[in-house]
Image (cartoon, rainbow, N blue to C red; front, side):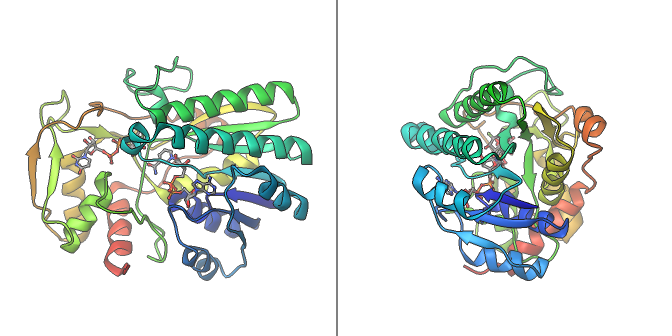
Length: 331
Ligand code: NAD
Ligand code: UFG
């Protein structure tokens, strides 16, 4: 069975390629490398001992995508390709709307044309907005507060409508919580451009001495220690969730939260990092970051019940593997 993985050179996509290859799938990657590097494809091959077909193309370009569909007989598509920086999406809304929604439409159109009826989409917990925790798939979504979040909600809607019009389609809308960590080999992981926005890569760069100290955005939230709480999930658990979703999907549209169901505060993550690595992380408390919510964690019972999938790796595993990648990484 052959799967088209868009954005397969990126952070979550590369780990999912490894999980797919290990599960016996053939993998074709389409990625324009706007936020990743070709070397990652070689590393996926090194870890798995298997070959990957790679097309360096922009998946908003219908003709280029069609050439890939014409050359392969796909059993399914996993669509990771997208722009993902919330702050940047506010500055460049058109780029985000165009890239993230046109890519979804082009891929859906090619799936219709070439009779590919399994589609897995990378959505985000951001679509819930500041809802009551834990976030459950059946909750009405709150309007997105930034263009990035809106592109996820719009893509979910597009795929839902296309699936209604194609009753043989099976679509999984996977809402990720906070993916962190790296493959245990240390060969692939998250490579943020510039100064990281996200907490875990910021911590690992402080640990490495690339950044002087962590800035903790607010300690006056109504949480266990006043710092923001998130549901961190090991990227390999997330990757394996995609393989299971692909295998277990039945016709129709299925929404799944992929998280652990556990909330961890910023300071708890810092402490777990020290526990995993023996490295102290200097930090200072600064003002809240605009747009942040206090608490975000998943109700994960649906994925467990329907897919038989559950995240297995601990917070300490996530910190150890994130550090293992960062400490060996040279750019
Ligand atoms: P990433 O930036 O590492 O990977 C995305 C990949 O898509 C990159 O390799 C990039 O080069 C490629 N890409 C972007 N636009 C493209 C285009 N038009 N054509 C071809 N390739 C293109 O990001 P990631 O963290 O691996 O995220 C993967 C997906 O998961 C994204 O859709 C993202 O929005 C979603 N997501 C990520 C998170 C997170 O915290 N990392 C959380 C929720 C959802
Ligand atoms: N934080 C700090 N210091 C930092 C970075 C983050 O204190 O330098 C705090 C944040 O305030 C938050 C927590 O660490 O409380 C996690 O922040 P991240 O930036 O790592 O993650 P977010 O939950 O803010 O954002 C992530 C993705 C978004 C997605 C969102 C909702 O990056 O793309 O989850 O799913 F929209």
